[in-house]
Length: 205
Image (cartoon, rainbow, N blue to C red):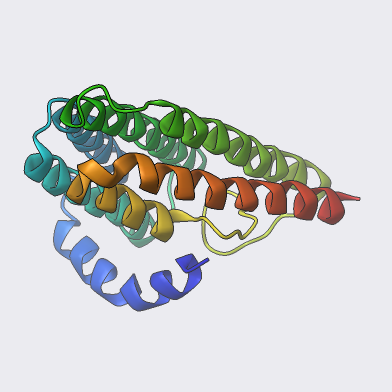
């Protein structure tokens, strides 16, 4: 919902940071992999109940994820297809791992707390991801792509990248409230998934 606005606000700072990183040893794909490793480390820290470390690793992961695109554009978008594929795969891996890590860590913190809210989030992520990835693939094949500067054709929705970063941060800052946050977030992502399914079907008719 806020992704377009956030991209406009962050474009110049990220471009300046990408310019500083534009040296031979740093590549967009390496930044993507760094974001993946940091994200998995954040999930592991959450599972162990190391919440402060998990928050810091999560934000470092998202910063690396935000810099790979600007750096790729500075270099003329070389290997955009492979880079875009790696980026979206890394994002899905980190998001899913974080849900699992928070589920394990918060359950332990609450003394055998409930896991079903996090299962609902994973289900909602699955449907949401399937809808927009299927739309992107079919839209490309049928010439109905949505070009907003990203590698894939994204259908807008209530739950996008900015909202995901914020909610995952809340989980890590408030682990004792994580199950309640998960229930609300699963509902939001579910609504977004339904919107993408309906919108994508109509756009491709």
